[in-house]
Image (cartoon, rainbow over all chains, first blue to last red):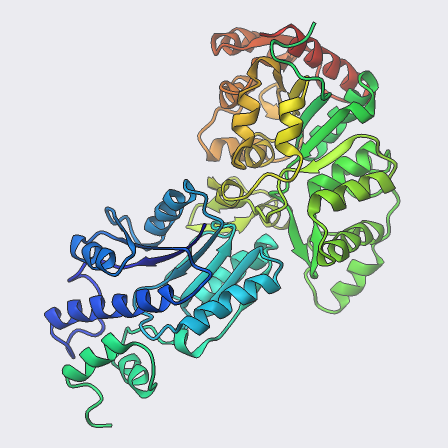
Length: 216
Length: 320
């Protein structure tokens, strides 16, 4: 099985750095819009045969299922432990390759996600392919086998994942892909996303409704 | 006599590095070398200078070939170090001091892997070239790096922990999740199913045998043959013969003793060989449901190792 896994925080808990510019309720709508965009992009990647969303939030889980993904609604021990547990759960069903895409990489395009799999082919089908975010984080992490390096998401995680692969002697490739570079975290990320004129339909529409991008 | 469901596929040994290699040298004095298969840990494999280094596969190969640097237990006897010294002059890290001809083995492995051969085929080619009759199989062809977690939330590859950092005593956990996600190498499960006896070499139970058993299917395949499985304690007189097993066992909360290691193997192993210095622990091991034999296991030379192997085989054949 080749699976994609999207972690999403509990509604009301995420995006503290966007608060102040957007109302709490709007942030939750934004979280769901971004998830909808990511799931739509993942569904267009032919290599992926299973999509799962891991979240502690029942409403997020319901949205994931409505979009045709499996919802793994689990208690939240933190981002990396929850990814570890979800990966292990999928592994029981014969997981061979795992693509983790963070839930705020709303602009992800199917072609860019597909390029990650092409890069893995280039490594001989074993190893790690990483798409960094522009702030040094990891937007997407493709691994075969699925736990060949541990999850180390968080600040400066691109460097951390790169070091783990290097240190472990694991074949590694890093693809700076434009549509995966923006994770919606700060107001300037919102502006950067709106400057790109494709993808992220749901997120873009909501941001415009909220008054972003009207002055540009 | 043979084990209750013993196959006829010869003896299979689960092996780490130095301790396993010395034991295997003894084993092949009692069993025809071509009837022995070693399934070797690859959790220590790592890339240096773009070259695929497989420390345990090479230690086992070099030792069985009689070519190992006996004093160190790894590397090739009489090897030079011109390449790493030249690399150091270029500013590269050289804490893993690969000898020149040792590096050539690894370079050959890398070239073969890039040509599309699997690690099992390449390991087989290398051991034949070294004149080794024993079959040497990697546990997996997938990358399976073992990471050691240290206090202060640090995480490091096992070779960095062992060689670069000198195996500090601050281990809080060992991460074998890469091995747990890997597939067994071609031939591994078949060898275990066909084995007449399965021996667990006196290797580090946490970072050498641990990763092998973590690869999906291997623990089950060994456990299914429990009646024919015997382990040799890597702990003698309350301390490992070589290496950092004491620090790693403490790090994962296991007593540093022959008895402590036996507890790790109780579900997959029917017989256990203890050193005479630990004779008083035999009763504790038997209480775990294992049969025991006690003798001098400090493998000073191949003949002592052969006596240990003979005792382990006898126990495996009596078991069940």
